[in-house]
Length: 470
Image 1 (cartoon, rainbow, N blue to C red):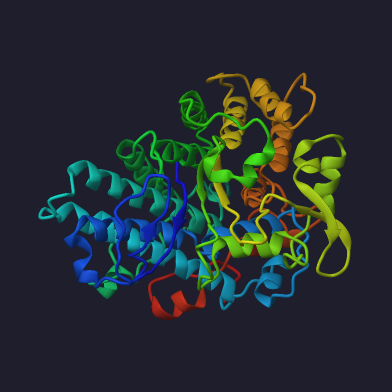
Image 2 (cartoon, helix red, strand yellow):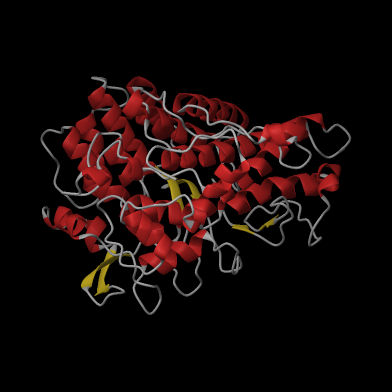
């Protein structure tokens, strides 16, 4: 599993060093010209690590998760940033700076991944670079590209359930930005089905290429876990259950015994893949994921106090007293407007600004398997009831005697809150994002997804804007 990644220098996002228990070759230069990236093992490795560094962007991993919870019913956003207020009020414009950064950072990472995927196979004159190294590096690039495309299509396109995936998704760019023809990047949006198929192939390739245990970076299990989520979102119940079961049955990711893993996430068996931040990362531009998570999800003086629990989420926990996911992972405090409320403690490292962003973890696999088995009338690995009760037992709750879809979605809500899942869980189940939210937050409404950003509309004459946007 990925351990500690820190950025030392970036040129087009390609160069970085990695600091971890198992140190790899370190690139000593502050920057290396792009035409020398493929001249040595160190610079090739640096280019791959640079993709992980880009994944630390607070827009891709931070703001996207925050937005996905406050557009839904988990977070009562009280912040003063106009771009975030627009989104919270379902009034997002194509000129919104936050969504512009998500789009640009996403395609910057995709370009860096494409550089490895397209160019590394042709490298033959680096003596210390083995075929196994090349396979793994390309697998890592494909995994990170898939993570990013999945993030983008979930935010900028209606989910599969609206039209069966025939609606427009996002452009599929497969060429590196450097040296490419402008026509390679001025593309129309592919459909959601086409984007999902592209993501699926990247993840299948990554699962075949990555080691089962990789003490530094992404593993095969992470690719299978994201494939399980993709298939859940597409209602491919048997595939989702099988993939989640493979991750669980591998034995590589047993559930943590308590919720202390949020304090030491990279070293926990709970972690399948996360965005790891360290005190040595330092300020990033744009802000790193650690800065977003810590600042928004924590009350003053350590944070801004902008993203407390919604009253609806507080009530959901209060309906069943003793849930450790509330008692152990929340703190009473005043929000940015002076209201007494609760904040999550899932991002606790306020001093160092070094809390990690959770992308995939073991508990989600049990909940995916439970939902897929229930909805597909399957019994792959275990029963939905047993899987839900496994999650509830760790949370200090009594076993249920029976389980239905509402019960599973409630456990997903309480287990995965503040990790960015709630918006898609509601939309893919044809549920309103807000209790009593009306037409603006209803499934299929124009503003439950983002407009294609103004920069892209201006620079790409071939792209189509989302309905209801300008």
